Image 1 (cartoon, rainbow, N blue to C red):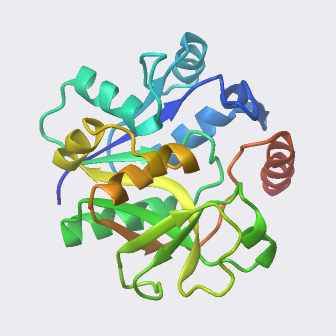
Image 2 (cartoon, helix red, strand yellow):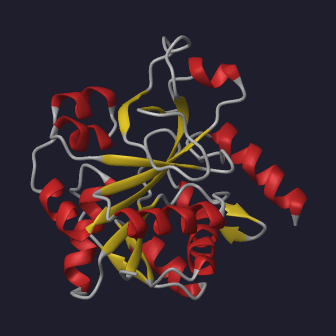
Length: 246
């Protein structure tokens, strides 16, 4: 099995919820919750790729590893590639981009994605979860993915498209896209050297750069559909859930 490096992009200047990496749940910053989830998978080395020194300091204070990156990146994928080059790691086959604002992501889903990537020698892989709440279909903050085949626990079909729009109730094989990507390292290098596509910019979805340039993205079924922290309401909801469980 090829070695995997987990990189977590993070920045303080998110437009909808500035400063969210350092918001606390159970007295621990969101970014450190994500780091701990990544470490618990035991997939490989875990490094936060931060735009801000304050994030680097917070991660290191809580026992994690972090590296400072440029403030000029347009996407998280571009940020993790800078970190990958700075780390000068040559024996890694896959780079797993784990979003820094999903502290409730299921560790087993991360492990499952990594296994599928290795088993299929895939270019790019990510996760899709079943949509049980139909209101998610009408929520443009929830990214959806459509697949060639209906997802199950044993298949890894190709993505057809990613979208935010709500007019998809009658489409087949529509899932909630979970913000995690696994890249073959050679594919990652090719991808970040391509300009942003119009589709990517218009929809604010970096994965569309890959789709528009004919890279193959495979989708594994996620067991859970975690809440990403994009707004104050998201933060309060996930804080309540995680603190209740503890």
